Length: 268
Image (tube, rainbow, N blue to C red):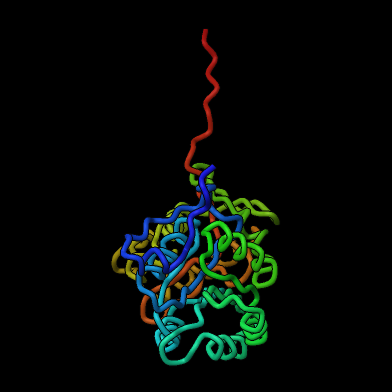
């Protein structure tokens, strides 16, 4: 068995190119999250974000606390993967500030500081989980899933949402809900889009309305109905979030059934 791939700056600083990292399982996570990686090492940040995206999460990377503040203006982050040795405001101070601003946010510290007093300082500053580098992609993924039980207690149920575009049914832990053809197209577009985000114009095009009927208010009426159906199926709020100046983001995991039901044919 090959060792789990590691997320470590050592390979970058030694002059060797960091390879792409793929989780050993190769499968989507039980619960997907919006995650921001705060890491000033460019290659390490990129490879960590890539690994998280391959796990099925919506992940972004920033290099400092100031950049994190900018990113949070238009991205609903549920979880931070945080280095401690950052330029400007350090990771401990940033963790304390993020914890004070959002008590429910998940914070995973990933750092080369492994001494007991460093770990205690990390937990004292608001870390939920403290990992030391080098960290495997598998361990980071497992830590994220462990945190899901706190930061999104209903997300496990939301992860069971399945859209059948053939029968136009949305199946969840609470109910099976019928959706329209336009709602199905919209959900599929959300599921396929990067970060599960769509621009307003894209969504208006998918709404099925004539050009002279297209308007943001008409789109919002459709979204109100769609949010209600997602919640009826068992999705946790927020289901679809408005992104200032851009469009909207689907905030719940959704599986689109892509295989058609088998046809049983009788030969005569």
